[in-house]
Figure 1 (cartoon, rainbow, N blue to C red):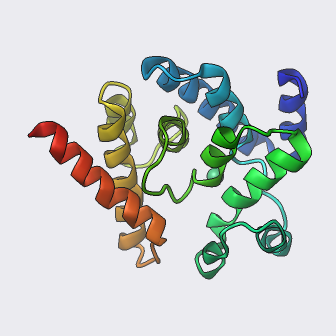
Figure 2 (figure 1 turned 120 degrees about the vertical axis):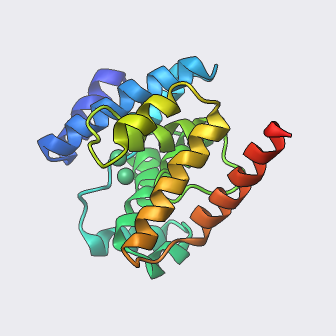
Length: 192
Ligand SMILES: [Fe+2]
Ligand SMILES: [Fe+2]
């Protein structure tokens, strides 16, 4: 599918505000990909499609996760997590994306995981620090993510998310904790 068509198909599936967020994630992903020397084209596609399933019916999301063999462990966690694996399915089945690297970036954009590819990290970070984000500390994190190494940017991003969940007394998916633990280690090793 051509970029323009992909954009209009995504736009159709999202409320205006969410679509605008998606476009800002595309911008940020482009910048980060360029900075870290990974394929800008791939990053833009993953960013454009990352929230494609965000406004689908909750039961439909559950069904997609089960029927397409995605990791069902997300179903035991907040439904906010379900659109990521379901989004990877939609990207493949309805947008014809067959590049597993793009699909994984969509699949893990909310939880993160251990052993993420650079593309996965770029999408995770871009989603969190796109220019429209206004949570406390957003400006600092945005600046940091655009100047630090990918590992450090990822550590601060996943740390923000895990801390946010802890403060709400919400559950944290094990992939997010694995991602956090791994990055603490990675950043420590580069310091030594
Ligand atoms: Fe999302
Ligand atoms: Fe998003």
